[in-house]
Length: 103
Image (cartoon, rainbow, N blue to C red; front, top):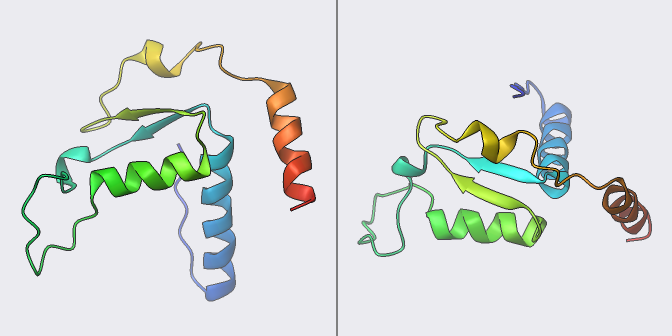
């Protein structure tokens, strides 16, 4: 797990790009604190600023459609869901990297 804290606008931009890169290249993404997010069927309250779980998952799918997305509360996931998954493919990483160079 990586904890990053930005202090100026240039660093914030760099951190944002790093976070997007991590989502784009991940094989397994643990989406934590799902209990604090609004569910789609929740009534939208005017002052409710919580993110919508379906919207966050849609954004993750847009950035990385092939990743396994696990929902968690208090970071509780089965170790077998994130370790030894055999989902890593160097060929996929290299092909994504090449595509990003030409986009």
